[in-house]
Image (cartoon, rainbow, N blue to C red):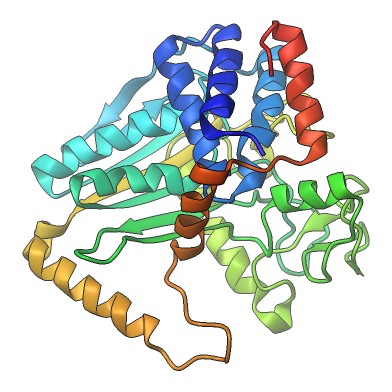
Length: 356
């Protein structure tokens, strides 16, 4: 276990060592440590080495000039200048909220960015202003469309955060694949097989090989196979790709540059746009109905779903419940890190002369 404060300090120092400003380093560290606190270990500080490799490969600008390159009263396109998506996406959400305050909603597409961590972090920023927040991003092609053997889409997550009154907020944050690639990375570190339905082999066959993608296979869309609705997961992933990439002028489909995880940090395939793309939005509740009435209705919605008749020992949860409860525990007890993640972080510490 490692205490949140120590992990946050270490992560911030590594980003500063890359040349990030103190403000950007703190924000980037906050995004990653927040993922660890919420139990999304695949997208927390385990990814820190990946951002360093992006920098090493000349694909990450630690001092970006993030700017709006096109806008209307309620929309904008932002150029991230190859900055950390961990910094670019919060910038975009602030613009979305500023527009929402004035016009009821704000919708921002982002080009020329990089991996932005957990989508939920960015959508939850809107909760600070009692707004509904949206966040999605395209990603490197690791996913095969239904009936395909060629990888065409990323895990392309969607996050939506909705405020409530007395109840905690509704926070849905999920990949549009059967599983996030980071979950496979965890299995790879532990030398464990993957459940059938997560990946397929190079020939399109079912496999439990957690290294299947490195061996020519691909991640499966949400649903796993056609009989279980993979065409719906494929459709969701495609929507995210179009909103994040085609709409913004970023790369899309098989041209989205790879994140620098092990085995996927080669030359970027960029051919149709600039960098990785995101799409973020903020909606003012009173653009639809009085805010307090809505929040009261959300409380009723949440309470009723918690009271749903359920399978013995498995009460119905509200999206965001598991992460919220785990965050309470980890803030007190500390954050568990996989041994291989610890080794990676120690290696980064030695390289940049930062004590882990």
